[in-house]
Length: 529
Image (cartoon, rainbow, N blue to C red):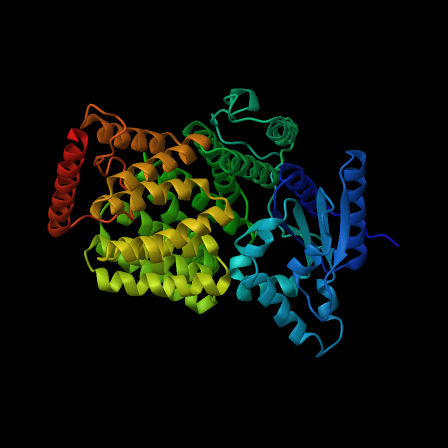
């Protein structure tokens, strides 16, 4: 027995296939929602057949009722290389009345608290859930839900809309960047293929006499995410901005001409939030970032999305702090952290605690900053967020008045974590922004020079231009003080200060000057021997 596909099912299926193809070779959590087991099986069979035609490997696994751990069933796949993994069995937790409550709670716990452990898997995961389970995941595993690459609804009753014969597209849309516009260093054959797949889907839809604006907006969103995820250079971020602007324009027109479906408004808010993030990352259009966040915040409040509201409040606070409106930033951070605690989003709570600590440090309220950093680090360790833990350790080290303690108890452990998780950018950052200046304060200019040299190696490897320029300038300042370039002396500081970089007090400046003077006298004496 088969279940007939509705138009909405077909649209969801097309979106799912594009999401799978665009995320091959990396982790992406694709949530497929269906209450009809027959329809679910048909859809899985259908996309697996398409994967077979493309000679892509795939497999299905089931969550165990006694221990419904997503990480556990994926680890059981061993060293086999899969293109796509489908995870079933969540609906089994709901089959018997009054049974499965404990198992459902376990599943929510595994999803929420072991999310970071999923980073080890380099393939997209299609996780089948029922509608009732989706509601629970949103409420009880918000951090996991925040990682979703897409949600695909099947078997849903279509929302009635007033459909005109044809949906006009926004006038004069920004040009869609194509793979051949990327620099040779940024592109690979794999990314070219993924981009081309999305562009072909977009062109096919735009050429149809009756364009589906919802599907088209979703494709533009996926294209923007691909540009934003795959490249770090400003040019590619500008491409991502153009694409997300196109998605937002489409969704706004949908809202103007249609009775927008309930789940369409959050999609617009998510695109506005992502567009705001891209503007803010470039830091050359902060006003546009703030406008996007404010509009997204209004939508999240309108539809009752508390997690989206908290995320956007935090983003608005980031903009306010960037503009040095610290008191207003603190107000927004406090509002965000209240919601994170309300919905149980522990990672959001930890990130906001750290952001609050950054502002307090900026306002010279060091004791309060330290309290917030320590609270954040406790949560990071609780949820297994190693990157957050290392960042908090670095921040606490920057607040230490005992420089040996700063290096040994905070900077070195943080550096070790960065090494363990393979974060070369953060290794370069802590070496150049924290470790090297602290060695200088200790009167150990040679160790400072070594730290800058190590940071330079990391940043050259990842081609991070601001970091390269910072270290080269610091090393030049070291070597130019003497004719002998092998002599390590004090580098210039703060060429590219970061938000967490500590501003030195007058006492620290005096101490550093004294330490540099002693070092120079000793080195000159040594050279004359």
